Image 1 (cartoon, one colour):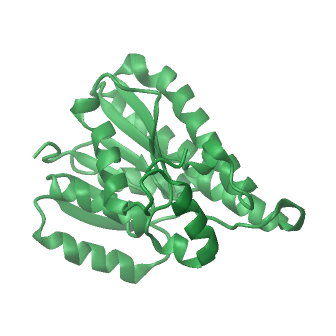
Image 2: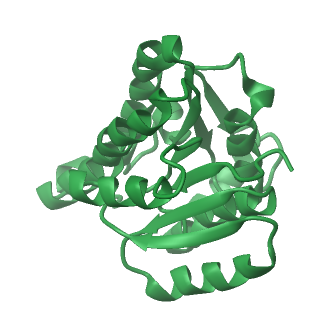
Length: 246
């Protein structure tokens, strides 16, 4: 198993794409710490499901948009070994609305929730990778950052920032043996699209080359590839997983 005994942190790791990523790493033998903000049931269910996998999943309740929350997750993951192998920054929210009607609260909430964890988790995660001069960080962006989506100026701005952040950090920590990449999913079958209007979903599907919605496990495959030694010469990149939307 390529991730046997690897120490992995996944933020927003108990639902949707994050849940699929946590499960993927655990199936491949990793010791996963999955951070979550509020959904206790999803966290308990994930831990229960992981009991039969090759690796393990421990969930930690924390607000990773704060330094305190990020530190608690990173320290919990590295408690036994003192190091971190993989950090996946997946925590995020959407609060769509056309800009003229968008509230300051919705603007601030999306940028704070989607960008601040990158700073805090990477800051403390990198510190746990420096000692071994090895590690991989994968940040979740979105095709909305690349194409623009009406009603998502806040979300697109935050996910565009994730790509820029990824490229800058890759320059910083590359000489230390740490790689940083991003994955930009398209329309994926998760709880998030359940709130979208059916006509909007159909329009996106029609515009995709493969003509279908993506699955969370397909995103997890891409994240795992970038985190693995198979991608040892890849850093500062954004891999688009969208079925041909872009």
